[in-house]
Length: 344
Ligand SMILES: [Zn+2]
Image 1 (cartoon, rainbow, N blue to C red):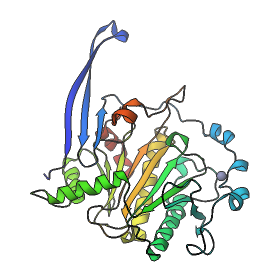
Image 2 (spheres, protein in one colour):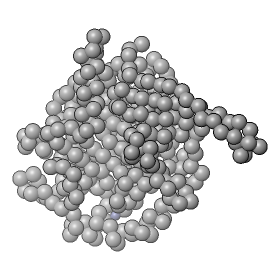
Image 3 (tube, protein in one colour):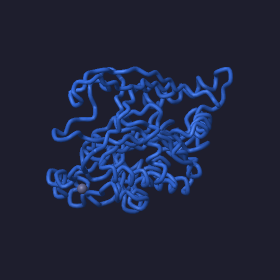
Image 4 (cartoon, rainbow, N blue to C red):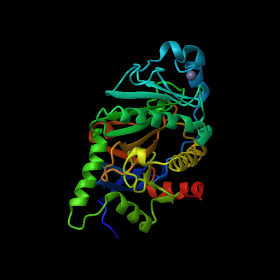
């Protein structure tokens, strides 16, 4: 089996259990570290379940269509435009989706893509059909800025779906980032692949990761053609993480229309699973080079997000924020088993 830097250690928590006559109780905690991503996390052996679906109407009440800058009555008046050298129309349009500059940019090129004029699309209605135009307009934009030769080398498509994931508006929208330099985490992935290739027994990290996971049969959710879907060994979120890797695709422009359909289909299956398990929020990123780079196969991550009721407690805490470790009460191997039937 190919070497992949997954590290695991076991530690045990002990206490006298108040719910069992103060008898001794032991909890096994798995400390995991992924050398590729640099993510450290602690897998707890009990399965976290969300007992009920959050009430979307509460969001709708606080954020009605009439106040939404992405809904049609305000859209033209309140959303930024591109200068004519980038887009003569001011905005990119693909079917029902529009893309325009972010009014609060994080980078030289940071855009917002509104999926459609629909103010709210519940997670179970995030189908290939409702997502297609949104992702397509991001690609149209990447093609345009590649044409302009601005020296952009890396890009990403990002999604904060709903407020628990940092979504400031419930109206579904993606964000793109393109830059001469990769983001910090993308740089980590690239450096890991470079180091891996330079090691004695070398090879392509992404190819070997897929082979490793396929042979291990623990976190390998499915291969849907070009894309391999994995439950991450060391998740970046409390509710686990789903990864997708596009085999041998070393630039965003290598992806065919069929690849996008395959991607949207896989996402939609994942959303069906999450919806049935009472999730209604997630972060998603698709990372890609804009000029071919064998150290970064096009790939992405999806992290389900949630609030803990009754207080609406955040799923981020000091452990993640200030110790760079994630407490994960979802066992990745179990998450994989639960997702597999959705891809069958
Ligand atoms: Zn809206």
